[in-house]
Image (cartoon, rainbow, N blue to C red; front, side, top):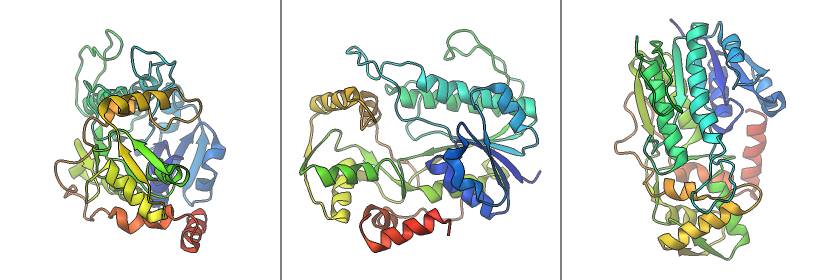
Length: 345
């Protein structure tokens, strides 16, 4: 069956806006579910796109909005949980990862089954594993197991990781999982964050400076999703998505400094001080720059063991080809690109 109607959860987010734009450019009908319609107002202007205000955690709403769709794409994810400043464990959980990364995919799977949707694409993350020390990676790994089960027929067994005895049936969904490394592009929360820090601090103490990443461009991630929709070769597959080059965190921060003209002294911290730095930043009110859970996640390199998946007939964009255009926010070129992006041109 040709995929022509797609429902997207997380369509107003960083990756979502790029994916929706690409799908609309292909003439596909896209339904975006958002808890606040005004957050996706730039998408409303795109042809073939409808934005619906909905509670994606309400399974009955999901079933209603999935009906008539050929495919569902789940991009919903969070980087940090609410914390209570506990000394004995990092990012003491109030259920944010559980609700967003585990319970929501479970509801999506069941809603697909009830609504008769047979195609599901799911955003995971490189490093996801049910036994990870990082709560973020652990919850993502559990979600991967749920989605893979949904791609099987007539399965029923006890799931120990869903808070006690619960049962789930495979729906025979045609599933595809994506596990990107850190994603870069205009509006990202990674390189742009370091650009802001480097503009303020003359010296930057850096925890986990040797941690390795293979940044992948947001448009490449979105295109991998879009190209997979109608491709049976991607059914039941999991794809690690990385850019063409791996960097240490220190190399990335140094590069950002060079691009924006703010070369700073970077002081790599030992493991103990890196952990304490993460703890201190975790306790800081407001938006989190880093938490102890991030520290644990960075203990595992965020790079791919193989190259770009051969099933996609394009090569990933280099960091150096894109990053300067948006990191140099004070240049005429960057402002012009920003105007173009806002106008969707």
